[in-house]
Amino acid sequence: MARFDGSGISIHGAKDNVLDNNVFVDGGVNQIWYAPIDDFSVNNRFTRNIMTFSAPDAVLTNQMSRSPQQVVSEQDKNLFWHSSGANFFKATRPLTALGNFDQWRAGGFDQNSVIADPLFVNAAKDDYRLQPNSPALKLGFMPLPWDEIGLAGFERSFKVRSTPAPSKGTTKPNKSDKEPTAQKP
Image 1: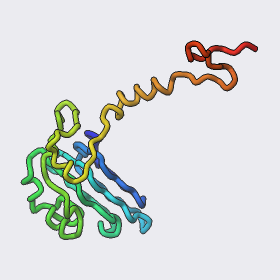
Image 2 (image 1 turned 90 degrees about the vertical axis):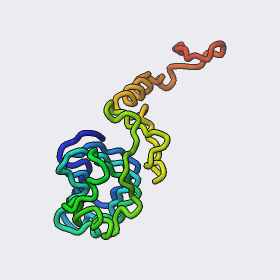
Image 3 (image 1 turned 90 degrees about the horizontal axis):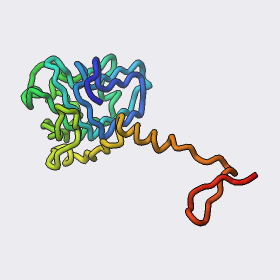
Image 4 (image 1 turned 180 degrees about the horizontal axis):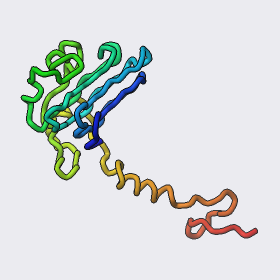
């Protein structure tokens, strides 16, 4: 997912969400917005994702009403990157629902996550494939099948699905060429 306003991820009053092995690029101000509306929102997991962003006033996580520990069961092994570099995450200003990034980690989140350039092939041209030496791969991130995603993947699957299947009882195999032929009434 790339270039969206507001929040890259918004979990609003839901439980048991698993966000694993995704790429999120420029999620506006809130990269992850945990917005529980009641005690129902529990056991949400955010693991092995790549999240890059560039807004100077961006925050990594934001939350309302309940503590992250009440809503998130696991957030770890992610790769985070800000276009200004790693120093962005050393800021003393609040970057998470618990304060700065060190306070977030002290709260038990992203203990094994890394702050590093994900080494996309060419992010300027929306090519989010990973270079072979990407640090995301060391976290267990599995490269995505980009040729099966988006319009190209949709168009390919549409072509495959749009070939009409023969109606039951209207075709039979021709023994000589194995192509279906119309049955005679």
